[in-house]
Image (cartoon, rainbow, N blue to C red):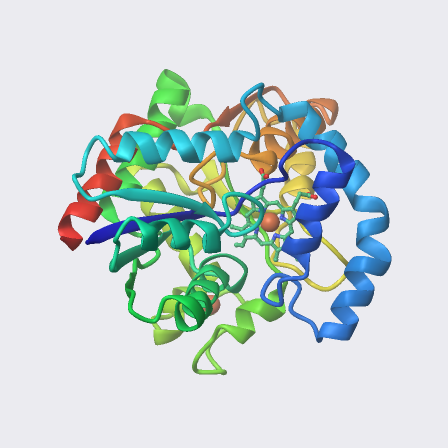
Amino acid sequence: MKAVLMVNLGSPDSTKTKDVKKYLAEFLMDERVIDIPYVSRFLLVKGIILNTRPKKSAAAYQKIWWKEGSPLVVISHQLRDKVSTYTKTPVYLAMRYGNPSIHSVLKKMNTDGVTEILLMPMYPHYAMASTETVEVLVDELQKKHFPHFKIEKFKPFYNNPAYIQLLADKVKSTLNSELQDTKIVFSYHGLPERQIYKTDPTKSHCKIDGSCCTTPSIAHKTCYRHQCFETTRLVAENLQLKTENYTISFQSRLGRTPWLLPATDQLIEELGNEKIEKLAVISPAFVSDCLETLEEINMEARQEFTAAGGGKFTYIPCLNVQPAWAELIGKWINNWN
Ligand SMILES: C=CC1=C(C)c2cc3[nH]c(cc4nc(cc5[nH]c(cc1n2)c(C)c5CCC(=O)O)C(CCC(=O)O)=C4C)c(C)c3C=C
Ligand SMILES: [Fe+2]
Ligand SMILES: [Fe+2]
């Protein structure tokens, strides 16, 4: 039997500091998230980050938590249910970190008689810390526990025309008549620069400069920065945005090593200082609203922008459980069958 496995990032089980600590320990000990040698990672994560971050992150989660649970997890379950109304293929959902774990869902799929799986990491853009870590874990689990599974991997959809259209429609329906006089920031989850170099199969193309990401290369198949630029370019083209009316930035930096620039928090403060009258932020790296959008953008960035003297701030929500988005995923699944 064929079935689909949708995978999203995952959240802590609750906003209690101990649950947030457990989740962060699993997340940040992933060698594709903090990609430094094991001993250094262990010392950094267990010795430093987990002493202070869980309390701070728990407070942030408390600000956005819903009565049903984490927005990311709740939305992902609702999306799974909605997608199931557009396809006859059974659709399962797992989280890369936390619950439901990928291993537990693969076990359930096995018990249900599934033999062929379409693996759909719910990330539009390829990164070691997102798509790759899901694929590698699924491969490991398959080899160890489910060698009879046939698994196909759904490719990143950062430039899929129907996905771009949905993002453009979301911008239009949120901004309405203010579209052409609003400055739009496309804010993507950030990455350490070294992860861009690591995923360059040519080992020479990516330079993180002004031109590598717009110069055609096979490296772009796995270049997060290129893929973020492409999503931005395609949405801007679809909406016929003037060059000066949109820009790109990268959020959520952790640690002191160089991350992709410009940083969303600094950029938004600068735009506030410039007294921009209307600013909108969209986060196309996420398909579901989550801590990084609801707290970091819609609360923190909003506050920074207005405190710096900026005018109206609009947050453009993720695609979430929108019927057209569920329908599109359903179409992708039906094309696989
Ligand atoms: C080295 C650290 C991190 C990398 C690299 C990273 C990449 C990355 N993350 C996402 C998606 C999400 N990240 C989220 C939260 C989050 N991310 C990091 C660190 C890195 N992410 C941390 C420490 C946290 C936890 C919260 C915090 O303490 O600030 C989330 C939200 C989860 C939720 O429960 O809502 C998402 C989604 C991607 C797509 C990505 C690589 C491109
Ligand atoms: Fe993250
Ligand atoms: Fe590049």
